[in-house]
Amino acid sequence: MPSSLEIAQEAQLRPITEIAEAAGLLADEIEPYGRYKAKIDLGVLERLAGRPDAKLINVTAITPTKAGEGKTTTAVALTQGLGYIGRSPVLCLREASLGPVFGIKGGAAGAGYTQVVPMEDMNLHFTGDIHAIGAANNLLAAMLDASILHGNKLGIDALSISWRRCIDINDRALRDMVIGLGGRANGYTRQTGFDITAASEVMAIVAVASDLQDLRRRLGAITVARTFEGEPVTAEQLRAAGAMTVLLKDTLKPNLVQTLEGQPALIHCGPFANIAHGNNSLVADRVALKLGDYVVTESGFGSDMGMEKFFDIVCRAGGLQPSATVLVATVKALKHHGGDPDGGMEAMEAGIPNLARHLGIVREFGMNPVVAVNRFPGDTAEEVERLRDLALEHGAFAAEVNEGYSQGGAGGAALAEAVVAAAEAPSSFDFVYPLDAPIAQKIEAIAKRVYGADGIFLLKTAKDKIAQFEGTGIDKLPICMAKTHLSLSHDLNLKNAPTGFTVTVRDLRAYTGAGWIVALCGDMQTMPGYGANPAAINVDIDEEGRTVGLF
Image (tube, rainbow, N blue to C red):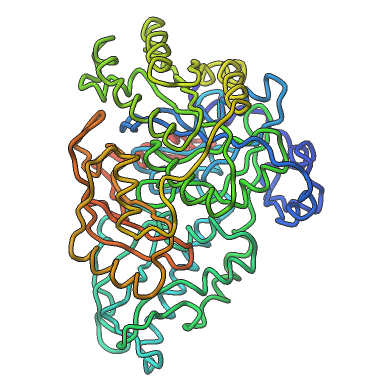
């Protein structure tokens, strides 16, 4: 079988104008970026306002392993499978960050015969959205430092500055740093750091903004620091929000591409469900809901991460009503959770408690979970069937094997049929906490009802932030937990389905523009770093000028 990159490079793509027309978009509602990519004008939402929404399907997974479970591959397979059985699906995915593309995880376009294309463009610079977000973020940082240098008319306490610069590369050397060295001409000397762009508040704002004016309002509401009197300082006060909006006016428009089998795919906003909210944009979901009869949207990492944030943050903000959830599981991953990645049937069965816990999380939200067994080449038929049986025993609405990697849409047809049935079945979607609950209670609800923890422990900095937030009236915002994705707990060393643990929260950040509070758990960092052998060392150009080594 050819590599994923070879399959993508050899694919015969349809012009993006044809994809748009087939999806029901008018010629003046798209702005082509070359032949195979386009931006979608948000005016389509007004034109199609009276059309009923499609069924919304969320794709999530069990606790990830470093090898990956193929969640994006499954989301694409489901989309192609829905097309194969005669439905009209639209896929919504997150944009790829260069951090993981050149790190361990690789790209975000799927794999094998279940991909979105053009794969190389998507995994690299695409339409420039992430670069624009970084530019807007860093413009605000520069204007903040300039304001302090030139008279500090707003009375900003430099020691209170919370706004950080960002870059779309895993660069651990930028986590903590001192800026402004070299004398007064170079600014005010202070300690700060960088976040990866996908985890920035500007990315979060683009992901939840409903239109251009809402984007402008949210950018203006960003809190960057406090005055000497303790009052918040915003981007609006720095007069930066207007220029930031101009930089982002095209970024707000969702990107249209296609699957290998020609279904429309909207790719918009960032990844990182461990340190950010980990979902594609709300406007992409809204556009997709008006174009098809099924919308497949993928959330980052496991159900305790991206799915929880999709339900508690995105669905709440956008008034979305999900119809079913697909939980991706693999034999390989369950063996890992069972303590023996190279073991046999017993090792896989030892890891089933992790699957059972994630099924319980999906049920906790009142949703019908369909388990997608994403089959890897080394999986035996006996292991795959045993996994299906165990999934049903532990509360799955249905469990089907995904063979999309090698068979495309035909290999995802059985999964598609199961998802259609689940979406038609009664469900009782609800959130795990009310917005008007105190901050600590909301964090505790996530820790207990989603992670399975006994409770939470707030360090002094976190307690102080809660007191500060309650004093400024932002305590009614939802919570975005930042924790490891490699465990249901905040400790990556607690494997499978841990019990008896307490989640430690070390700090809180108020994303007043995006509209949520980030809870930093354990030693979670908002700027990742590369290992000794990142994927970047394999990426190159061949003699014909084609990219090689990208996955």
